[in-house]
Image 1: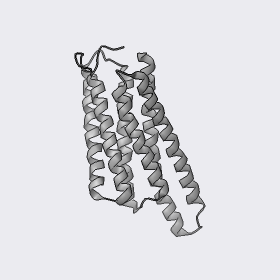
Image 2: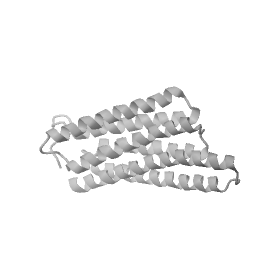
Image 3: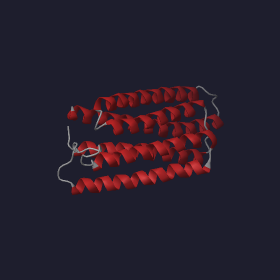
Image 4: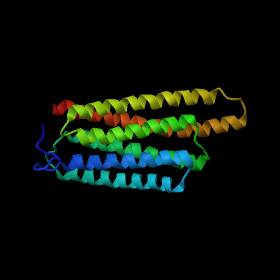
Length: 209
């Protein structure tokens, strides 16, 4: 195992530290998304946007550190990719609220379920990265839970699409269907990126143990 660590008395792993901060921004952003889906609160939308911008800045710093560091504690491609997927989750959280606002979409049971599962995946991302250095097998368990949440999001997504296509054949319904499908797709994509992050965490653990 690497001698880079966040544990007292050991050298700080700047990459793990930055990834943890990125994961925390994902958690903040997705929690704010959940509140926005529940009540359309403007302040919640602004919190999602702020988290997305803060996440972008953390990723810029991480990439800069990668350029400056010759030897990294983990595979540098894995570090880069994990940061990218965390950033993508936040990007899709933000575009979800943007699409809801632009298209005038209000939450239904399917969207609420999908966002709730996404929030749980974001919580698991934080735990997985926190445990990555000291308790890699615990981190692996959290990574598996992320993948399970992604499966739940996809199940809700398919149910939502099936229900949309079973509606009346009218212009009004078709327009509503297209608007809702676009929003569902953004949440589904966010869950896909969380799943990709879980895959990278698993790859890192295999290399560490």
